[in-house]
Structures are given as C-alpha cells and as structure tokens.
Image (cartoon, rainbow, N blue to C red; front, side, top):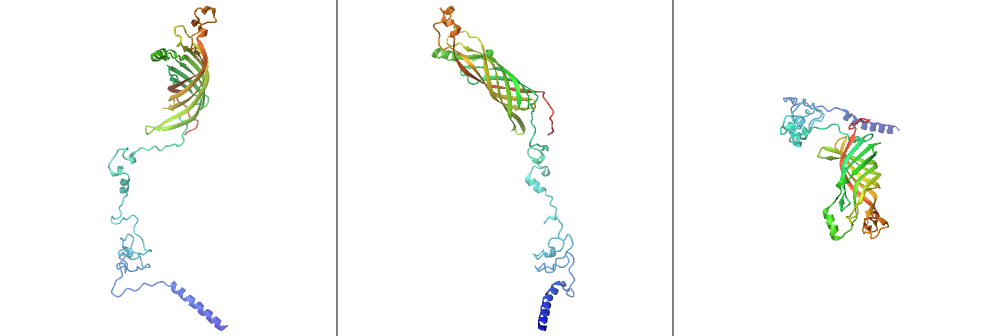
Length: 357
C-alpha cells in the first residue's frame, strides 16, 4: 500500500515539471560586454544575416521603413510589433492618389485633362436620376373626345379605286372602350381608268363594277393593347392597337359596263357592317397618327351581264333594253376593304392624374 502511494506521488511530480517549465518567461540574453544594445528602429539582431528574430523583443517605432523587424534580409517578421503606416507605397513614399486607374478606365475623363466632350467622356454626361421602370399610361382616354380625320383608299378592287376623305368621332366611356361614328365620302373620287375601259371593250370582258357615293356607321372601339418603343436613340413612342366594329349604311350604284348607252343607274342605300384593326402612335398626350384597315361588308346588286330581248312592261315592248328592271343581275356579298391613314386629336388636350407617379 505504501509503495502504491509512492508511485502515485512520483507520477504527479513528473507531470508537474513540464508545466512549470512552460510557464516561465524566456529571459533575454545579456548583451556581451563592450557591445551596446541596438537602437530603436535598427534591424533586429540576426535579421541582416537571415537569422530568427526574437518575437518577444520590443518592436521598432511607428513609421519605421520597410525592412524593420528583420524583413530587410528576408528574416522572420515580428508579428507583435507595430506595422508600417497604411497607404505607404513601395518606392514612392506612399503617395499613390489613384488617378492612374481613372485614366485607364476613361482616358477622356476630366481628371485626365484630355476632353470636355460629353459624347466622348461618359463622366461628363448628364444623367437622369428619376427613372420609372413601370410608368403610368402616357395618354389617358377616359372621358375624352377623339377627332380622327383620315384619307381612305380601297385595297381589293382591281378595276375601280374608291379613295376619299373620312372623319371619325369617338367618345371614350372608359380608358379602353369608346362609342362613335364615322363617315366616308367617295363622290367624284371613284375612278375607272381609261385603260380598263378600253381593255374590257377590246376583249369583250363583262365585269360588273360598282361606284360608291358615301357611307356612315355607328361604331364601338376596344383598345386591348398599349405599349411603347424607343426611336431615334433617346425618344420613346407610345402606341396602342384597337379593334373596331359597327353597323351603318352605304350608298352605291353599278357602273354601266354591258350597255352603257341605255343603262343609267341611280344610287341606292344598302345596309352594311364593318370590322377593322388599327394602330395609333402618340407624339404627345393629345396628338397621334393612326393606320387602320377596315372592311365594309354589304349586299350589292350587280349589273346584268346580258341584254334582255323582251320586257314585261308594255311601255318598253319596242325597246326592252331600256327597261330598268332588266338592268340588274344577281346579288353579291361585297367586301369593300380599305386602308385609312389619318391623325387623332384628343380633347381636352390635358388632364390630371388621379395618383402621382
């Protein structure tokens, strides 16, 4: 039992000796006689020869040049010592202002003194600080009146053209829905070219032709699409597309082709329906240009392609070709497809937004 106690005491003493050794501070060796201690700021002992620097020794004064703490000759650096001033540049005394990097990025910057042209120097460009990714509708239409004068011309009649002026007036009940009227005048603008006339006579080609006088319609307009696009580099155009449809009347008459010497047709009113698609581009909040394709559909009574040899009316028994009841032939559903190019004027020209941007 006593031997076990001695062995335990011996083991405890053995473990305590290294702990005490590590707890002792390392004593600086005394300077040899006749050799003064190194001055503050001088390279540490052994650093010039690449020796190990004493990390526990006092560090050099603040602002010491590069190489202090044994770094001049590649020795170890005292990490506990004070570090050099921030911003001190190697070889230039720490006076790097950073202007070199600006000139590398933009040689025409004002700091480089080369150019004052904003087109060449991005730094001189005037920036627009207020940019709204999602903007309000540029031109509100609700409770506004649209005046739309235009010029129309036919697209699907290869023998007779039907150009003429027109006017549309629309009132917007909401920002996307409007009710309005439009009218077209053709009158003397109908043109059957002399070439077509001579060609029909030479080839004896009987093609019924129609002449328009005027037309008027009650329409409903719906605006499903609104947007914008960039033009001329820095200008934004706002546009909308719309669909239109309505009901109205058109005054037409056949052109005497088969027997122009005897047949004299008169204008008659026909019921028509119309449908179209349009594009409107705004230049400001009250002025826009528009392009529209409209199809006016009606039932046309064409000229008879034959000359009657008898008449049911005794008055025309001797001259049946002069009987107006024999001048007309079959009915045909006619599509008067025309393009309309014009401008839109919105009244009143200005308004107040209900909410700010």
